Image (cartoon, rainbow, N blue to C red; front, side, top):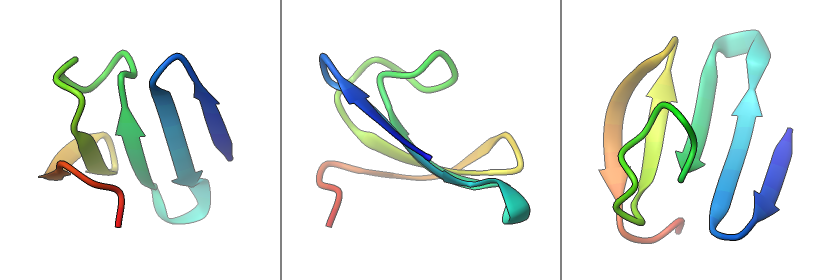
Length: 49
């Protein structure tokens, strides 16, 4: 799943509970991309690379 718009970004692989998110309801609104595993933040990155 990929959603984008207005800075919002979410790409997830539901089968393994992994996602990368920015400006979603579960991550800080600081412009960083957050790696989420099973609902927990496991990393943050300034760039999506």
